[in-house]
Image (tube, rainbow, N blue to C red; front, top):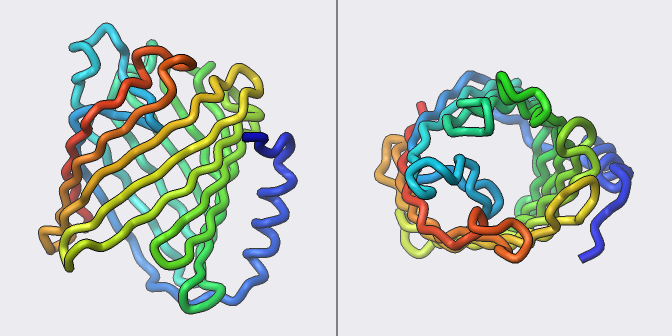
Length: 227
């Protein structure tokens, strides 16, 4: 798939979304914490392959602040082994809202930080549109290790019952600046226990011909709590 070669498409979408009508959102601080049996990102193992043969659990969590107007800022972190770094730190900010009853958008910018492994750091633009159970998201790296990297993902979240949900996604990458160009996929279910406690089971992978064993399909189990 031929993805964008400049950030212009995302920048144009962000500008249009900022002008679109949106509903006021609750202002306030929220937190989340959880654990997964393996940290996979876009189908690729994020932990070092020399540790426990791809079975290293990770603790993940972060904090978000919504301003009520649609703007938000946040931080998300994950343990792991990223060469010399033992943690991934994501710092982001953006704007989300509704264009109509069923159509919503989310645009923003994220900074990826890997302490003691600065050559992994990078910045990324993102923009998404959601209609009902479907979401299309486009990301574009702008600096650092992910400069010029693009990925388009198509996903759905289909409720099966009041508590159980089916989640599925496919992703398509370009091959710019050392990006593997590996397409990825995921299929799983999530369960809501109530009181902002949830669990998930997801089969996720990417093209092994382009990313090697790190792209092998693996079942990832997770649990998370928001408060």
